[in-house]
Image (tube, rainbow over all chains, first blue to last red; front, side, top):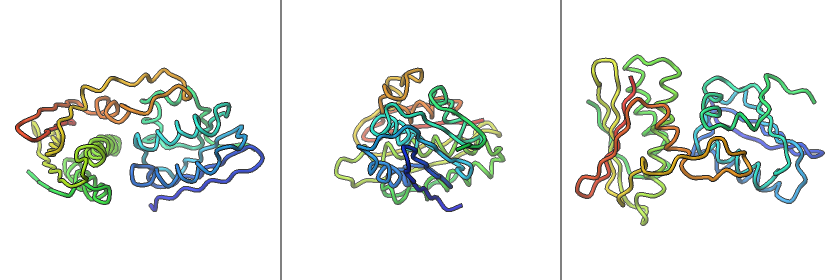
Amino acid sequence: MESKCSVNFKEGIAKIELSGKLDATNSPGLQAELQKLIGQTVARLVLFAKDLTYISSAGLRVIIFAKQKIGVNAQVYLIGAQETVLNVIKMSGLDNFMVIQDSYEE
Amino acid sequence: MEKLTLEAKLENLDKAVDFINQQAQLQGFDKKKINQIQLASEELLVNIINYAYPDKKGKFEITCSTKESKGLEVKIVDWGIAFNPLELPEPDTKAPLEERKIGGLGIYLVRNTMDETNYTRTGDSNIFTFVKY
């Protein structure tokens, strides 16, 4: 699967669609997109991960970056993550600080 | 035993990880273990690509071999500055996101997914070996 990411920001909610791999090669692209949100008031960071097949520490770092630099007070949501991705999130303890759900209700 | 040598550049990451993945598949690992091997490989290779050669000119060499019939041993060698990733302090995985420090997460994932990890400095080379059963 092709690796893609897109960020959509509206009314305080940043929706981040992820597919394919979020690795050292692809993470800088997402980080650059998220950097554009610095200065905005972000209440929610919603990661749509249904089509994400792989994440490495480079991807985890972007999530940590997003929380620290964009939405210190934002709630982070992880939606529809596959087991392989969820395992890495759990191993790093990031799951304790996210709302993990199968689907997202507006 | 299969061997691959590449320039330590980010453009070569996919090629290197694919090579190791292929060996893992030949070894008959399930999807979960292949994913873990892929993860460990990326983390170690990215460290080399980013930090081993300050002038960005250098190589790494990957050797995959079967260990005790059902295991896979991956040896990654570089000739950059001496660096033992296993000496990095463990990240605090209990800390909330806003207090997280960025370093050490990659090697932590390697340690937590592989059955054996070993580092030696021999002459001018860093030799990192991991084994998955």
